[in-house]
Length: 212
Ligand code: ADP
Ligand code: ZN
Image 1 (cartoon, rainbow, N blue to C red):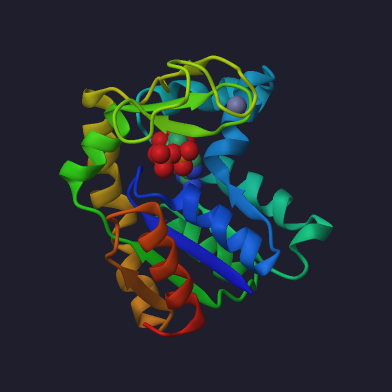
Image 2 (cartoon, rainbow, N blue to C red):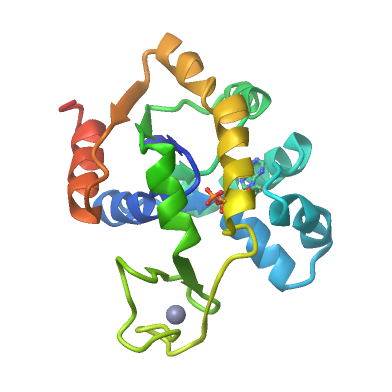
């Protein structure tokens, strides 16, 4: 099964992608994670992407399309995959179609902007394993320390209020039009449940099963 998760930054795409990954035994592919990994490793790709990412802008299409093409060639994608954070623009969606990759379903996780702002401005992430926390809603057992690997928790550079607002604008301007694109292909389902991780997970899995 080939799936796309669509949604604003902070809508919970990463968390839901993990749930889908467990349920269907398909890899979750996050272009954001691939890019952050490249930055951490000091790769050329990372150097190219860093300034865009830090300021909340999109990395150029040809760069992310190239990354995705490579990633989808891996053996673990043969039985399917779930894309988290790709496509984000119309040319990216068209690139997938040109690659003759049949997408079964596109799930949009719809969360109001004010909730996103609150979530992302309080988000903290583990530098090592990527686990995410929130300073109020999902505190680690020990402040500033990851429950799983005991590493330091940090605030992502793009998780400050100004940059979050810019990312939301980019989402509304460039990514949201993809809803129309996939609606026209009869692939879109919208999940409006964001109250808790669990309720959102249930709604997302229901949507994939075709119950919504
Ligand atoms: P979020 O969904 O919280 O914004 P991501 O980890 O998906 O986080 O993306 C972080 C940043 O990485 C984006 O703001 C953008 O700069 C870059 N990025 C990730 N995926 C794409 C993509 N498909 N197209 C362009 N830029 C991307
Ligand atoms: Zn950790």
